[in-house]
Length: 235
Image (cartoon, rainbow, N blue to C red; front, side, top):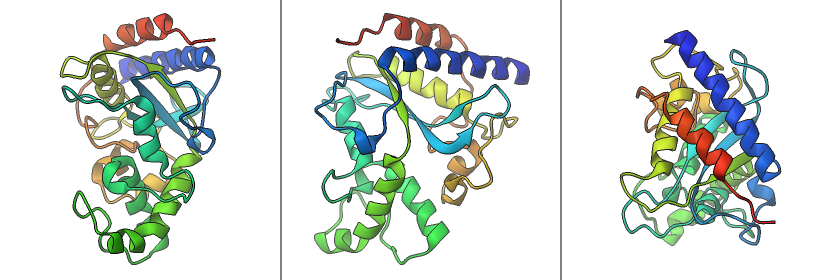
């Protein structure tokens, strides 16, 4: 299965190459806003500067896969979710309680640089006083995430258990994850994720914790190929 997984990863990145050409290149959240074109719903693939493939080809490796609006009746859009990861445009602050991506990066920064943030990750809400004490770390998290290039795939299906977005997200994460699997395209020794307090992040090589321990369905690559080929970008 190891050789097959390597071949499947190669195919996955080939499809992402097709996707990147179709959307006109990767973006960063530092240069993105709601005024740009965004599909209503979709899935995103983040890279990280300095993190490259080493076993399955050349080029940057994916470090996070994500989507949104998987629960029935959810009304969130792709840009809404990306803007939660980006943080506040003006101040650079943010809300890690609304973004697990921000939460993970914050724990890694605390471990790497130190700092007294005992409330980081506690609770689903926080008082104004607590948020003020966490703000300097939120700003650093925004800086890190905003520098990461990403590409996106439009999949405008309805929220729910049968969502194609959920299917692609789950299987892409499972394919790329090195958690309890032979390591392929591992992170560099300097990858910030090594400092994260979540074992699944450290051992998977991804800023993800869900699905990293699961097997993947190779058939998802055919679905991904179809979705990439059918996606249309407004002129």
